[in-house]
Each structure stands twice: as structure tokens, then as C-alpha cells.
Length: 143
Image (cartoon, rainbow, N blue to C red; front, side, top):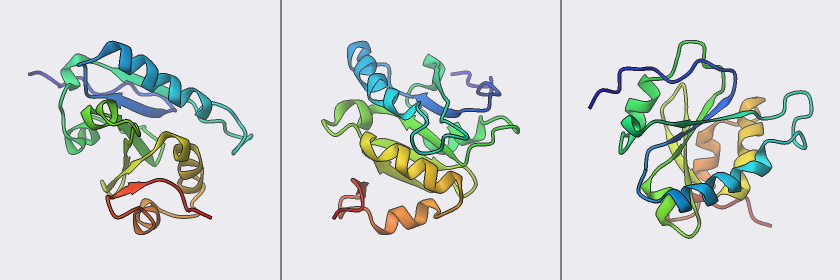
């Protein structure tokens, strides 16, 4: 499979789709992210997402997707919507820290908060990993 084309060079948070088994479910998953594209957390720089859909990326592991990022990619994170994302009722996205390559599964309602805090340097993804549940999924900081 040829995956040589790099991902598009844009100033946005990439959401890369790597599972093409269910178009209807993918539509529902995309809708979950619509709320992130507002300015409630960071009015000076609202999150702009770029949905990257290319069947050549089907089943690719995160490390290969990271290798496809253009040199000008500025966001500290990459979001991957894979088979686990689409198959699980909690829709846990795989969030990858660009520089370290570490990853964490995150439920959709926590993505914007996590993204803002990492983007402005309050914490790195490792801080969220430490507070994730026993199953390795970040569901929030709790009460």
C-alpha cells in the first residue's frame, strides 16, 4: 500500500481517520468533535480541525501517521480515529503527542480541555496519562 503522500500542510489540529469499515458511524464520530471547534477555551486561537480521510491510511499505526506529518505541523497533538474509536461505545480517540510519540485514549468530552492545556503548555500528555483510569482511558479529572 502506498502511503507516501504526506498529510496536508495546514495550521490545524489533524484528526486522521484510519478505519473505513462504517461510514454511518464515522459521521456520528465526526459530529462528536464539532463542539471542539469553538472558542470557549481559547478565544484568541479557536481550535481548527482538519479531518484527514484517505483510505491509504486504513489500519496504519500511530508511528507511521506521525512520520507523515509535514514539517510545518504546529499543533502539539494529533488525533487518530481508528477501529477502537469507531467500535467502542465511549468513542475513545487516540491522542498522540507530536514530539514524544506517546499516546492516550481520550473520550470526546475531554478532548478540548486536554488540547488547550497541552497547547498552552500547562501540562504534557504524560500528566494526563498519570490520571487516566486503570484501563488506560482518560475520562476526566473527576470531582
